[in-house]
Each structure stands twice: as structure tokens, then as C-alpha cells.
Length: 217
Image 1 (cartoon, one colour):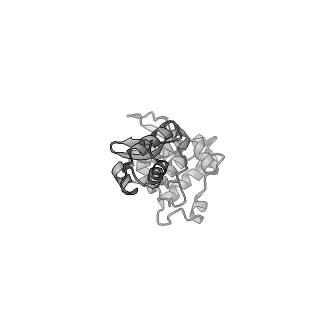
Image 2 (cartoon, helix red, strand yellow):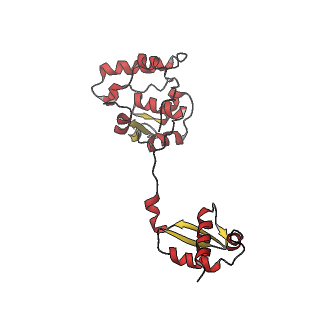
Image 3 (cartoon, one colour):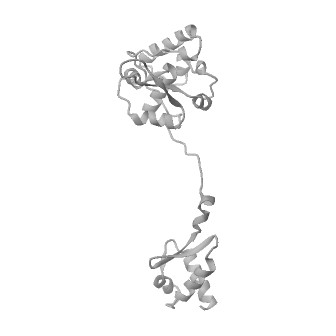
């Protein structure tokens, strides 16, 4: 049995340590005494408790019991901003769904990385809505109910119009292509019998980049 004061000293040193310590390192704090008996006594004392004294190689440290890991897991909501490309793709899908990757690229005027659409799908805002019946049968994308919920929309008919986007500073006035695309959507409102017929995609159109400062995924 180790002296009670030595056991307490070893316990205090290990508790305050920022990294595992060897017996020799611990002994240097306690006048060079042999701390092995104290370590063994503490190891037995903490065995099966919420905090355990464990040995890893030649070093000792306190750790929480492995079987209690699930109680200590912390979950937090991490706010992530959409990239400019993701914001543009989301806007195109929302105003022109269902739309294929090729149609998105035609409207944006640049290639769309696969990861961009993956981010939107992981966020639950867009989904694969089938395949277009054309050669190659490309996958087409559409928005989801989660998209409407996140942005406080009852349906796609509630998406902001051209004047609203410009007033909010989300429309680049240099780009006139977006006005053409938005104009098609406004016209589609009069002709559409349901959400699925709003804003058919014009493969030759280009859309303006939207500022994504306020968006998060």
C-alpha cells in the first residue's frame, strides 16, 4: 500500500496534466519518490467508474469510461454557407424544375461540379425527379418540401419575382439573361395549371449569379 499522501499527490498531478505522463515524469513532481504503487492503487480505485486511470505504453492518464462515450457526444448545428455555384444551381432548379445537369450548365454557362448538386441533395433541398426521355436519359432535378419549409414558402408560386430580387440586391443588374429567365417564369404563372408547369427550362438562357451571403446549408 502506498502512503495516502503520495496517492493523493499522484492523483493531483495526473488530474492537472494536459497530456499522458510517465511514472518518472510524475515522480519529478513528488520529490523523486517511487510512484508505481500509488499508480496501481489509483488504477484499482478508478476501475469501473465513470473516470478511469489507464496506462498507454509507459504513460498514464485519466479518461472517461469507453462505455459512456454515447453520453458525452455533443451535437451542434453547424451553419454552412452555400458556395456561389451552389446558390446559382439551387435558383435554377427552383425556377425551372425539373431540370437536368446539362440544362443547368447551359443556363449558367459553365460546367457544374458533381459535388455542387450533391451538397444541395445532402441538405435535402433538391432531389432526383426521374430521367428526361431524350437520348442518354439524363437525371432531372427538382426541389423538395424541405426546400419550401426552409425558405418559408407554401409552394413554388411564392418564389420571389424579378422586382423582389432586384430590391433585395440579389440580382446583378449587369446580367440581362436572368431577366429573360425570370420573364419566362412570370409568363408560366399565367399558363401553368400546377407547380410542375411553372418556368420550363430554356437551354439557351443564361442566369445571373446570385449573391449567397445570406444563404446557409
